[in-house]
Image (tube, rainbow, N blue to C red):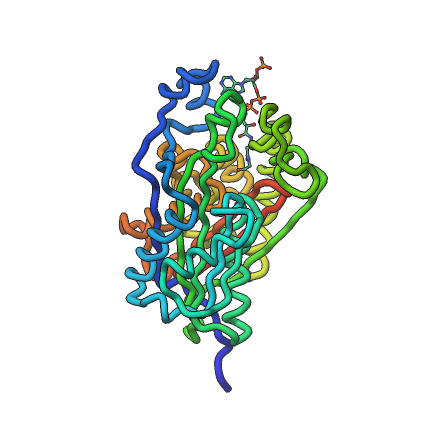
Length: 330
Ligand code: UT7
């Protein structure tokens, strides 16, 4: 009997723009301090895209690096899924521009709007298409240009976020020892308005008055999100482990969404996994939303921290509230 097809990550890539915005730079823009940002979040600096760059430009670099790493070309892909809330334009999808820039064939290419959980949503969808036998290779991307949707007069948000892109190639495998073991996806809109961009959609189309009040920028009640983040990330991580019949002690690495070092510290405590087993780069990039997991994944891989057979747990939470987890054996 043929083995059930699984998906395996065969390449990753990341791209972060060259311009660095440090905490000290932000002290000149808003009433904040390097000490407050470092203590409350763990962030020291973040990257800002150049004016001529759009989401698909960042995504292109990350995707090309992932393809190169996998030894594949764009024409080998069967699907492109991009997790983003800061696409090039409201219409069409960032994935469509990415497909064209990569020179991929007329394959399905679409965006997933699950905010910070976008990469894990995209990974889960890609995994299901591979398991179902429809696709053999799927490009999964997380990309954000959050600097374009931030109000640099609002210290509660502008110090947190940054720009970047990360990508992974999923490929079908029948090796029972490796691949995506489980994914879990959740949304609960109880706190939908605690993290949102109020204007620019069908509820409140862009207007001069709305723009003057920064209603086209990110609004967040951070402490509301903080509390559910710790609880939901821990619960989703346990569910992914349960689904694979594994325990936290079997996890080699946790690659979490990088929103706040204090959140990660509390999740580590709840899962009883030491923080030393978490891949953390929040100090250099801040919160890059859907890009944060694939950037961290790629960095850890290139630094040689991962070994074949390692078990990697990923978890993310953001606007929606949407959250997700994934368990992968490398
Ligand atoms: O990735 C998407 C999901 N997002 C998240 O997971 C974010 C979750 N939330 C957080 O990470 C934290 O809630 C924040 C980092 C956003 C805020 O930290 P906090 O410890 O929850 O602070 P707070 O919002 O309760 O504010 C504490 C104080 C307030 O002053 P008062 O009212 O105590 O006088 C704020 O006005 O800190 C003040 N504050 C700042 N001070 C200096 C808020 N932002 C700043 C700032 N610099 N940038």
